[in-house]
Length: 221
Ligand SMILES: *Cc1c(COP(=O)(O)O)cnc(C)c1O
Image (cartoon, rainbow, N blue to C red; front, side, top):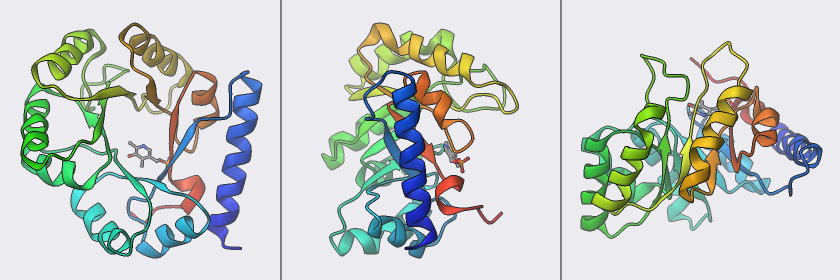
């Protein structure tokens, strides 16, 4: 068995245990974050049964997954990094889920790309849950109006929310805030939790955890 296959089993065990401890069904989805990892690592994960992958750059994802898709591999691709408006069309063609919708200009560009390509990815809104000046994401205070804009004015299929809590702080409070933001708006997906904190995120209601290092090992800088 490959190291990646072993890691995958260990992660699923930990996810199931976290769900049990929280009294939840063990149905949290694992998004395998393969950014900077070679195609061979993705192939190893696929061979071990992993089908859902996250990438943070459009170009890198295209290069890595084009051959696999052409071979007919059944997989689902999530964009988890910032998206420029001029790449909206490429992004809707390539990704099944775009997790980083975070500003009106991007919502407009994505709506236009959806109309043009007839590709219909699902969208998550990225929330800057710690109100950090340098970080992407819509501010929590602006979120309700932005959600309205995305749904009503742009007609986008918004399924849920995504966040990355401030580094070096206890994440639980932020995970709970994200869940509370989603609750009144019929948003069923909560993408939160990474290698270091996915069990806490599951306790707080994560439906998707995004795990890179714990599955693939350290990333090259
Ligand atoms: C890199 C990345 C991850 C995975 O981080 P790990 O700590 O390696 O699990 C998850 N989410 C986003 C948005 C990322 O950029």
